Amino acid sequence: MTIAVDAERLALEIEELAAFSDAEPPAVTRVVFSDQDLRARAWLKARCAQAGLTIREDAVGNTFVRWKGLQPDLPAVATGSHIDAIPHAGKFDGVVGVLGGLEAIRALQQSDFRPERSIELIQFTAEEPTRFGVGCIGSRLLCGVLGPEADEKLSGDDGETLRTVRTRAGFSGGLASVRLSRSHYAAFVELHIEQGPILEREGIPIGIVTNIAAPASLFVIFEGQGGHAGGVLMPDRHDALCAAAELITRIESLAKNTGSTDTVATVGICEVHPGAINSIPSRVRLGVDLRDTDGERRDEVLRGTMAAVREIAQMRKLQIETRMLNADEPAISAPEIVAIIERACEQESLKSRRIVARAYHDSSFMAQIAPMAMIFIPCRGGVSHRPDEYAAPEDIVAGVRVLAHTLADLSRAH
Ligand code: HGY
Ligand code: MN
Ligand code: MN
Image (cartoon, rainbow, N blue to C red; front, side):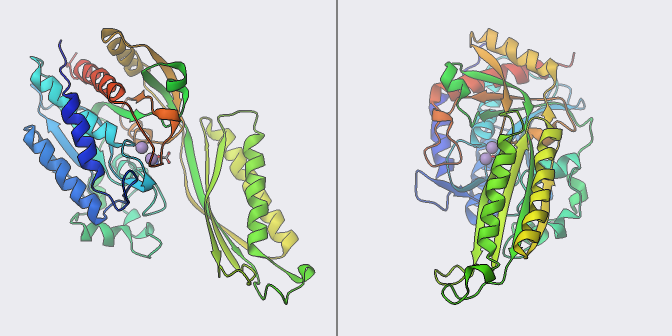
């Protein structure tokens, strides 16, 4: 089967989508339900409509773009990813899976291939945690890890709830209607940049994900006494930032000492109040992100973190509160889909290797309702979540070609 990918059109579309941003190029900021996100969604739907595909949006804004198969009553085959972007990110994270998925469908439409199962592209809402503190809200609701309570439970730093924000963005209806059954899809495959250095370092164009690391995240709030930077002597202080600093280095050492490099820990948020140079910090909020391919090893770091919180609170005589945001299970790819992707790579005479996904993805949750696997392509220097994130056009096209073969294979009703 000849797969004709329109590389030029795809490259142009990636640039066009990147322009819907609240940051100066080459950075991209596109927070879910922001005006730029809504403009990007409208642009994407217009591109999908031009391809003659049917479009449905659910109550949280997940967007479903379907190429109807010859046997439309069979469970469809799905692909997809996200278009929201954290502040000052790049233009490829998530986008390669959405626009690459659209291009894979268009390439199959151009060939003489007709799918028996429908093929559906999904653009998931809020893969990034920026707006509501938790990532993958759209796919969590799809698979039932999150339920209708999320409407009031999830809110941004501005206090606005998910319900308020999604309704204002034009997505109404009960969140219970977002949930899909385990038989809704026959398979789910996501194309994504690796967001790591391995494929580029080894000169391999395709990574086939075997498992996705499990994220856990929490806020830690330190309440100290504050006071005048000159007037309060050291023995009398209950400095919230010094306590936070101690916890940060304890978390780092816990992650470094699990015996595996698959364990990672990051404190990506540190808010200091009142934030004056001559005032002892009275309140600090840390945002902590812990991950591992092994859920139990990740939880060991989480337990160690909680023990350190108790010790530091006691030693420094201040209040420390922890607020769990999420603690998810690692996802395992379906071996039969891994094998199909490997076959697709052979058809394209592309070298591939199996690989672990260290970032989380919507696939992490789609794995709970359908056999899942991911296709990775290299990104320069392994860099992501930065304006200099870059994937070469030839690597994107290779990923789209492998995805197209995989979707075609999966869409046969056998
Ligand atoms: O944080 C992640 O792993 C993903 O990029 N949201
Ligand atoms: Mn990301
Ligand atoms: Mn992503």
